[in-house]
Length: 601
Image 1: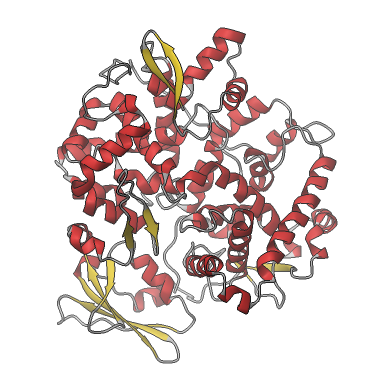
Image 2 (image 1 turned 120 degrees about the horizontal axis):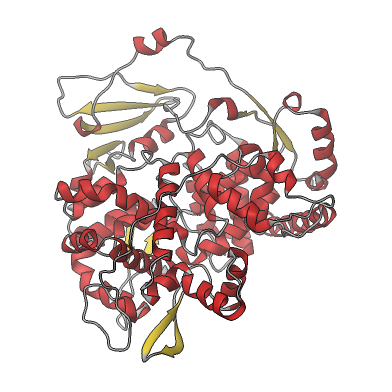
């Protein structure tokens, strides 16, 4: 089984050949690279001193189908909405029986002799809800999204896939991820929104009293009202940064120079793929921009030792010890389940016994040793997968993942404070940009933008093709052109969809369904272009409300310019760090100006 895939250029994707030993470093076949590069990589490969790892090579695999005639000969098609059930049977191999609602139309059984049945079902779950039949555990009943969305609140509380905890003191609610956090959370929120709407409004109001939505204005705080933002400027994107461009920003010792200009070039065009392995380490903060070649070699050796010390901690736990450690058992169980369904349609991770899956598993288990309080939460494998794909190295992928998780940490904490804050910030930005559209969403009980939950949780990982995710992430890691640029990316997508949503008079369920169906249909360059235009439009507003300026970091830029005359992105970024502003999470400031409360993001 191989799904049709236009997300990745097949010429650049490679299939992993199995090696008898464990895996740490992925490499192309030696013949595919210059000999000098092979020698250099051999010299720098410090991981070989660790017995548990070795290298694995790749080979390109030919298609098993020789002609389009052979494909069409066995082809059949049907609408997923016409599907009644899917029965999974085992007879030495897995085969699947598809049953349509119109039982008079039989379909051939699908035999998965070489595996792939799980990936097939995971793909199907993107378009339909599959639930186990009460009378036959091998039969999965297929239901439409609307049916799933209309389940009652009482059914939700009995659903094993979704947990709702109510704390008597403050009615804080938190989502427990047990299977798929994206479908679970989006579906669950759609089911409970009407029930919890007032309680959630009170909860979110406690986070930023100055940004309440559809509530009475609180004295002493600014409230966003309709503001003329002026004409949105036209912006353009550029070509990806090349290896030659990158080399021109490096001195003889390997230090990066003209870093603000370099970041701007990455923001405007992204990176060519061959450059990502090195550039991402700088963008994520694994390598300091001012470090030399020798300093980076030393750093890599130190980080390699540190990584394998942590890896040995869980590797050396015996089965008997693990039986007495429920948290470690739970982490391992979740990781094993998620790894087996993470990007399996990507050729880097496809197939049985793929070494890439071993690396995903080992890095995530080691991260549990690095941050045992957080451990593993479903969704984190989605953040690691593109990084490992680019790095092709276990140690480098781990430390880049650690840097990314430093930014995303609050998204995965039990109380999900980061998610709550971002939803409030996004609602505030949308209200400023298009009050009519925001009022329409509010009238449909969608003012809190819960349908954007998955976008924010894993940074559009499930919304874009794999290669577009790489482009978006590297652009966002530049920190340009403002704080919380990912929120403006959300606004850009919604701006493109608002006409259809309003003209079709979509209600709550229809809005959620429409947003979910945008997955893999978005043009990343068009989105980035529009998001940058929105940023420039807001920045030029003379009467910009302080809460919005705070969300995007413009208030700090203004203070920096007023006090020191510095206006560069680098200087403003440093000022933000010194001011205790981190990752767009809001906290109340004690400062007062003209009798009004000020807030710092």
